[in-house]
Length: 352
Image 1: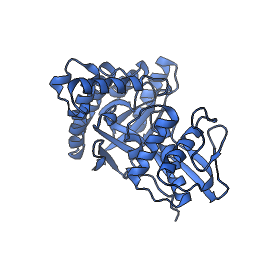
Image 2: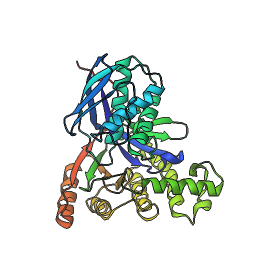
Image 3: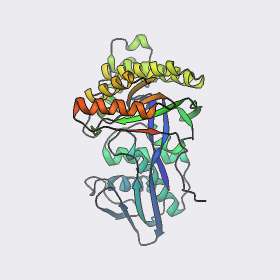
Image 4: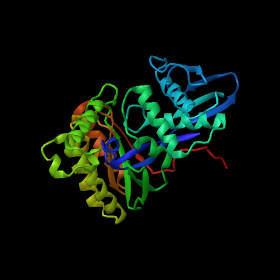
């Protein structure tokens, strides 16, 4: 079973306000090989994470304080699926991953989706792909305490090769948009690991919810720019939704300079209004612009992790080298730059 990570081209901190975002599922993924059995236990090992998870297959294992800590995702998925009627069939599983941890590329969401698919398949439970995403989202809430939106999990489940996903987080509808052949997507890790549990993510979400309540709307998706003009946190959400819609239109019409300008505006909003950027992410964006990209921005929740850039086809290697060399010399941090491609969403690994 495989579940890809994701890069969000534009539209961060909008998903938990029923807004719009534009992610792609990427060619870095979590894979899980498994064997079902009937001893009532689930045992999971990882090639890159410490320890072995050994828990009850019926979802009864307490999630909080479970060690190793990454096993909380496994326990949470089993607990959520038990509520969906999953039979307590056990399995042994081995996890491998090429999604960098703490990068803002949804390594935890990919793990949750992959575990949910494995647990369902092992027990013969049929779960709709969107429901798999919702199970993985609920499991992340339970395992980490981070009140994330559903973008990451839906992108992992519903990804399409060579397409970005215009995701409406109110309806959960997705409109795929072809990524033009003349552009490549570059991800640059800042060398600063993102830790949402220790970040102000929950505070930002609470501020958004308070703003919506103050305005008398269900979510900030329903607010106007006039209503939020004096509230930077809410202003980011409202303007970001508008940028996502404009970006989707520009991408569909291959207007790449427009896409780039919208990415830069998004980064400024995340930096200045929503206050989730870091000096390292800001510098990577500036260096990317100096190197000639169409546009760049932090991707994901912020507080560290990666930036994403749109680059003219064929220029990615040169841009990556120029940016990382200057960034390393200026900051002393070790960046990691790599191109990503949009791929299909999670499912069984097929071999020919």
